[in-house]
Image (cartoon, rainbow, N blue to C red; front, side):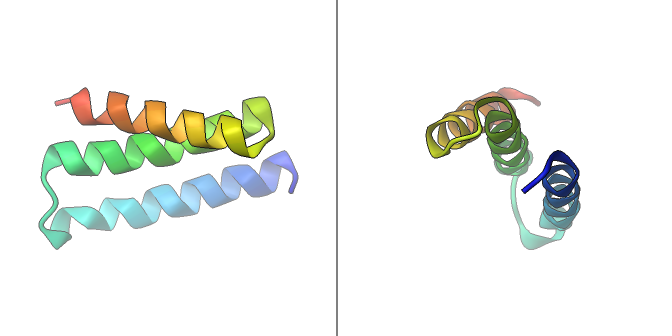
Length: 68
């Protein structure tokens, strides 16, 4: 998967998460989900393997949940 495809996938997933506001998610939950997606994509782009993707998703989720 090349960088353009990964970026497009990130944009599509982020756009779909924008619909989470109508599903009863709290702001903290929504921010954690968005952070996990962005962190996972960034980890994959930087590290290029499963460990980097999972680490980025975990870190992004934690950081996202702390943003108010």
